[in-house]
Length: 431
Image (cartoon, rainbow, N blue to C red):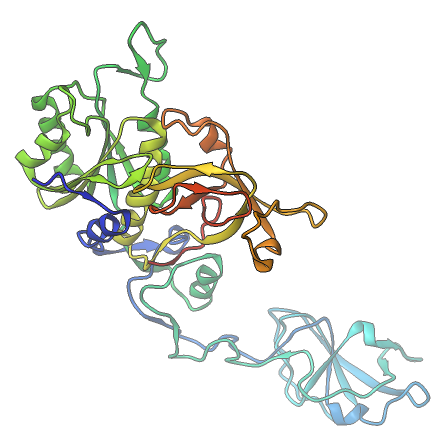
């Protein structure tokens, strides 16, 4: 066991190095949204499977209206009407047109579609009038324009968003190979915890951590298995951790990670596997216990609600994503200008709950005298969201970002440019 306190960057790298991607599974197409593809997939057909119209209009030969103008309009005979899903067996001849709907197959002989709005009614009901020329290929979707038969549609490792699901549907995939979603064990420790439906008596508190952490796990795409809160005994801690290691893919606990007389998480991990590290140079949430239990990754979070939430966000969430096949594990980071002074302790990386907003162009960013012109021109301001106590979730609820304050700093003045992890954005970046 080591009690060496690691830097945040080193701790995150070491933790994620223990995380392995889970095996593939096959799911129905409509269950694949948000998953990571586990194999290259190719198309069985050309998409589109035939030349078709991109507009409601008239299909014709471009050369038949090459000399059309407002002064000398040209009338063409309308010989058929082709709806989406229909097919016309004939071939357009000189000075003929076909009424055609969006998505309908282009008739043989046609090389252009003129939309309805660019035509006028002719003297005869069987004709349509054109008052301008147009180029070949106009308003036509070509066969194989999106994908040709045999071409790769999506590659292994790609994220399946709504557009990707649509591509797979267009290329005939009823079932899709994806990497398995991890099942996360959520375990809370402490004699003081009671179910959320009970009214606390003296010395008791509702077990909010179990539910907020389960919600975070679900938001990250994991399946969740919640366990009843466990008493502050080594025997109960070991028994619950052992059970979870047979039922889940990753074990997450909250509470019991400090050095108090009733904190048994470290000892329980050691008795069942290997302890990797137990403290990180960060605030909030310095105690962070990681290791392996029966070859499964374990992460022990602090008991304070915000410390647990942020530890999950910064360490557990990227681990869940990696297990599910993602390669982009971190939320977007942007810079913003502090709207007020902040003091902090040197040697710890702070993650403060904050809110980024677009700066009013009439509102000064209150830059310090040392801020340069580029800082003054910054388009976003950020401020902390109230009380930063690790026991309070309200300021986290109000936040849309975490202000990342470097270890070496002790005081940051208004106008300083800081990095902000956007909690309200799902687009991820490479780790």
